[in-house]
Image 1: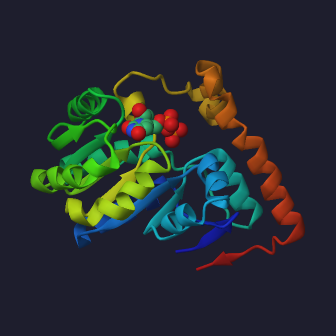
Image 2: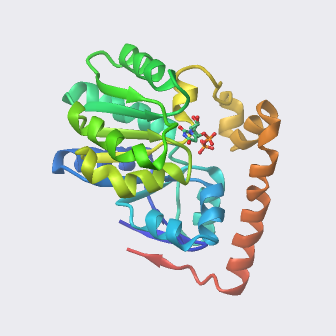
Length: 249
Ligand code: UDP
């Protein structure tokens, strides 16, 4: 599989179909396999945090979650067709899981949200087995118990919606103990699936403006979203100074 480095983070050249095929292969092979849905803010964060960068780059699959990552990858010469949004990957994976009999554990978001998201997914994908669900507000000292509960549930797929960097750290440390074959970090997806947060309308999504929609809905995110112009600046700078199209296969 072809990949590029964007500001030190690996991005794999996959579209939604290829990412899904890869995830399905991981489930069949057995675990633990980690999937990172790589967003712009995560790359900016990883730039200043070597430990986080190593966790991201150690994943089995890093998909381009945001339009900024897609454009940056294209600048490096990788012809990505579009983003692989965590919420879309999750939805498609659940659809396939329902057909194959793979059970899914939902970990993350505020109390009650993971359960509601699980119920919504089970309603949309008849036959989907929800092995368990719990909120994402637990301390580090409880992480082992959380992993043990997932193990006891027998889940094959672990969806971790703890936000970054917590979800990547949790999966890197505890996925093996959880017994799941695949762990995917899916950010704020449960809030969207449970209907707590609306997803950007089609028009915004088509134009690559989902970030703008989110900013309009949640103005308090402006500080976090400063990562966006910073990301663009760093990518352009990187391209002008060193960017020699660091592609690898
Ligand atoms: N979250 C969590 N545990 C925490 C911090 C955050 O479960 O300790 C959840 C939060 O409730 C939200 C998700 O993680 O559902 C991340 O949301 P955010 O909007 O930050 O994610 P993004 O999609 O931007 O990565």
